[in-house]
Image (cartoon, rainbow, N blue to C red; front, side, top):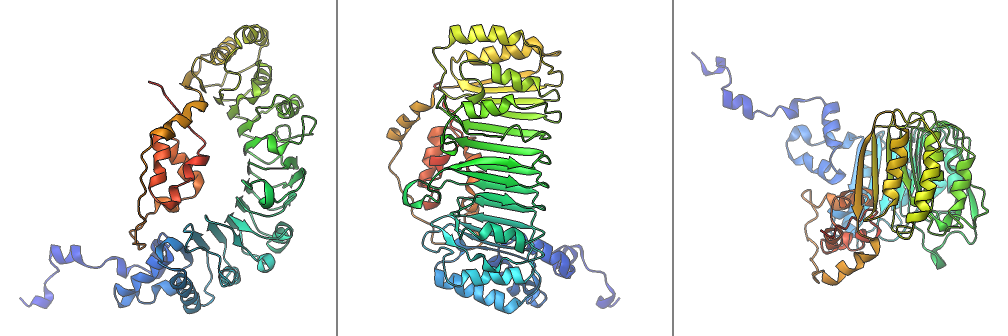
Length: 473
């Protein structure tokens, strides 16, 4: 029998290149999980792959993969020139290296090229310094998602953005330096605004301003660390997921009119962390709470210690107006953890006399300082009104102010930066701070602080970690 009529052997069948025979659309989807540099490198695999990357619809460029700014700029110029104006689904520029940043005269031209290529998802992440973004070319009927980090732009940016991009649905601005007093859009569905702008010469606002949010289609809202900005929610009844982490810097005084809680009547998941250690200023969200009606759809609730203070009235009021609540999580810091036995016991007795419906409550988690008697008072109030006892977890820790003792025992070690920035590089370090902080939440404080020796990227990341759990055992 002639060899040419023989079927391929099992080995030949297994080792044959099945991926290259896939349609271009599937190959482009596979390459969308690569960085732009990795995607271009596929051109050396075979003649089949030589020009596949030219029509790639997802370009994700990480500065950490380039050894110098010159090489990075040349790569970006070449890839955009070669591919022309092939439509883009997403375009990302991620730069967290201080020696190869995004700040270059040509970077805004690359962003403009992406917008002219009808990009739908645009992401610009800088981690060292601020990237100066030119807002003048943000005119697109295709842009739906815009994520910015450490970007500096003019006061007209937001106003022109919503008018120039009429289908924009998601906007995220983290640590951006821009004067903002209003978000007004009929199409926006998801808004994240986090500002860690320091005081002094870098402070954007000179005095307290109202931050008006007028977004009738908004579904998700996340506001955090807003110095000199008092949130004022207008027409946000469509929001179902809301998260707030604010402190005294957002409220000029205890007389400020705040409607953060009362405006969210249809929310299903709500996080309210107010770092208000000033008793006078803590009256602001409480006064707003008294104006609330019923949260008929609220199922998951996260609260800080602001709603407890020296009594449980605010907490009981909240629970009474949340008949569908299924999960309650409370984070109580060390402030007020001691010296309350007699007061809280009396107030607890009054609170337990106030009935409320929590028949759907399934789980309660309380994180509090060790020995804090308020935790047991909260449990007693809930059990007194629960039809069936929910699962209750009390996570106790030592006071936060002992954390600094760990720093004295840390070794003085400095790791050199890897000289390799290819496809085998450090992907974890390229993640946003929010994800790194979430990863750190599973570490002990000592382990968290020790991450500072991993690389320059990690030197100060631990400083703003949100979760520190210290167990003296």
